[in-house]
Image (cartoon, rainbow, N blue to C red; front, side, top):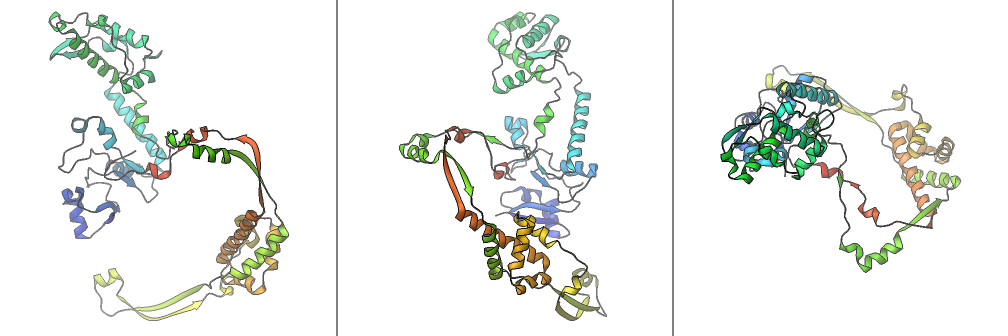
Length: 432
């Protein structure tokens, strides 16, 4: 069971959120959602914020940065240990993901945020190209001993990247390199990279080669990459594609027999009689339609002679002296006009002539309900007409079997995952 907690003036709530952080982060505390007003802007540091859902429309870019900043901290475990790369390795990106359920005003905000991040990172990592000059002079640590790459070794590294198409014409790292690095299928560096390495380090040639390769690929991956933002920030509305392979049940004799019966293409026709629909819809409306009368309540109250601040806050400083309820008559709504035919046409997808014929067929007493509550009359009448129309379609539909058949690819075609597949448990993930 999940509990929500309003972030307000209640002292117990205040203490739990701002003072008893250990209890708030524990599994024993049932609170999972906190509804707040203005409190996410500054002053509240909770590392385990996994989802943020803003309920108001705002174009304040500074406030958005402060709100999103609440969820950008590295999360902690039960003992307060940070879940960083050192403690959880490759899982750090999976654990520290933030989901922002955003309004349309976030579009420009995200664009500007990515631009600022790109500019900041660009100022730190000015090297955007994997050139020979970039590698020459870099220092690698081999067996705790620093080894400085010379121009020949830099040329070996650059030729390795060109030969495997790991750089493009502008010397930018390509997707081929990123894919190979992620799948750990990078081809080995040529042994000529060992030229210039101190002789004593070549006693264990395999270990030295492994250390140099690790250092070289770390240098390659340090080259600034604009595409990193596409991986850091995702569109939560982007449809997810999942595999749907056939299993052994498809080959079973029982299923194959059923499949041969149902895999035909079909065409269908519907014989639709407008006169019959008008008659049946009018009878259905007369039988089922009920429209409630609009009412309003008037209350009279007078302020008490003595009251305090607490009575003002909870509304008890006024004493009710009189109350009565009356029916809202049609004459009180004389200034409001409704397009009765137009609204029913929208609701039923019928022509104005057919809708008008149905209204002419219903009893005067039934049609009089329109004056009592026009909006409810339109809504319920449209629903009743659609019910009768659906019943007639079911009765009059005829299917025709075609020669074409579906094959098994309809089971393995890419399928969009259901909306609930996008959800993440708040205590497991963050997602952007």
